[in-house]
Image (cartoon, helix red, strand yellow):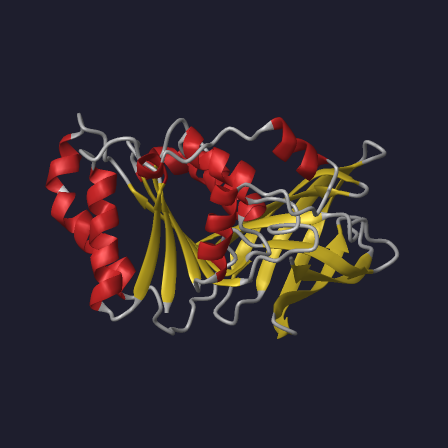
Length: 308
């Protein structure tokens, strides 16, 4: 098995570089392979040219693709998983990695009539100066996940994982005290990268849309639900179609059934709310929830939402 590692950090004297090396050692110690794109060492050109922009903007699936971009395409399609390793800069990846996506995710490869293979997994490993508590409290971690999983990797990988190495700023005392522990964590991520293991059931970072609904319901195929989970607590925000903005909050039981209340404002400016019980079922490789809901006025209905 082979991993394609996209690494982006401007300095060799960094925790992130040590994290990368520990991760690579884990891959090789497990008897697997990797190919590396070190974007700074390669001096990868991150600025998209006008010609590249116009090709993608007009959805032209033409052969005029730069040689450095084609090399990245080959690395992707020769691999089983893709791994991004980088430091967090202002709740984003470094500009050079953002530019990598701008150019490498070209029309006819990553979207449109795609030539990009569906990879088994997409793993994000990033070092962050902030503690995890702050990243979660202010929604910064969720923002990073939405960009990487909800846009860049959606429908391009089968499984996703986002791992943050927190408190890694040079001035943080925690950096040194957790140095060895963090490198061991990186090594284990590499060593177990290709292990076939049963995934823990989780709704974190999953997106759903409605495929059926009762006539009195208001969500539709244009409505997208963005789910999150912590322990047995679940919540989601949703919008689209006749829903301007909605939120749901509830719990998941031991059988993965959901029990929650919901509230939204619709296109007519009405605030609607109710409660719902939802039963999971896997069909055709996708997760569905069969829902029985009830408006606060007593009217009842059923719906089905399916994982995107």
